[in-house]
Length: 106
Image (tube, rainbow, N blue to C red; front, top):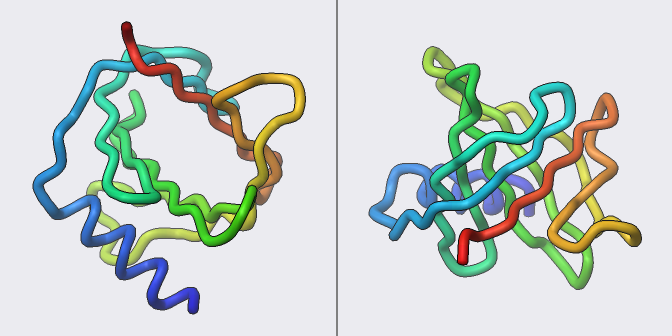
């Protein structure tokens, strides 16, 4: 199952997806403008430090996050994440307290 999700994330990162302007917030990096690419039940955006974050839904209210860097051949799994009860568009629970929020620009 996890191999399939990683393959899905890699294909979303490598495939052509329509990017849309958004505001992203990532733990330890703050809030920044980002270009959000959505593909089916996943999303991808670049972080200000050059890494790429990808997220894939794997069940109802459950997803997996991944980080990859410019020199990374395989993304690092951040663990299972769930929607934040207090903040719409935010997901929490990743390894080392990783969390993210995405708000698509209107």
